[in-house]
Image (tube, rainbow, N blue to C red; front, side, top):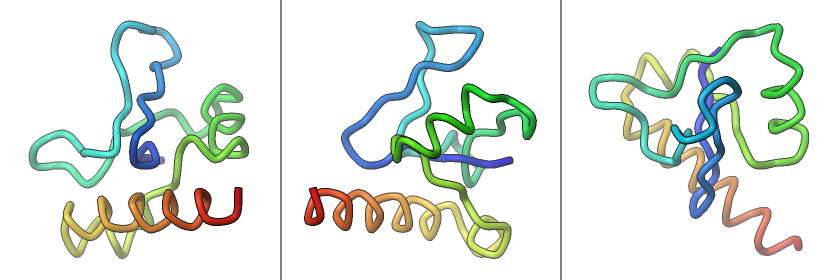
Length: 80
């Protein structure tokens, strides 16, 4: 699955905690690829630190995926 961190958050990778998932995807990508069956990433998604990058947004452009992560971040900040 493809994920991005919400704006302003850097999420440590599961097996490399000194490497981070950010709100900016790697160059040429629409998000960070993580295992579908990882409880760690599912927990981070449930906590709201990560957002799924939809396949349609990923196919459209990396910029659209980044905008989605930023929009989720703003919504969370306004509700919190």
